[in-house]
Image (cartoon, rainbow, N blue to C red; front, side, top):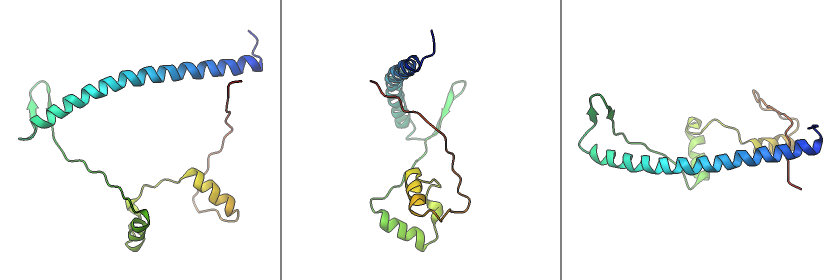
Length: 127
């Protein structure tokens, strides 16, 4: 088969569709396993109320507390971060779209140490 543009576009769409089908099937299978794992984990948590569990030749279960923090008032949170110089409380990640807009709005300003990785990409749509 000749690699015409039409053939390449159709091949791209077919492969993309096949990947999506596999992802959906895999997601369904994983969901079932994750649900079962959660049932087992819940039962082990109940059994750990008295303390950690160790079964020689099988494994150990150690119960711990995990915590996640969030805020419903970002303005107040940012104020506290700034006042206490506590920027370490935030993830060090740049919001890509916001940074692009910032640079477009401020073409003479480039933050020191800023890196960018640009590359061409394609978008393929069905006819």
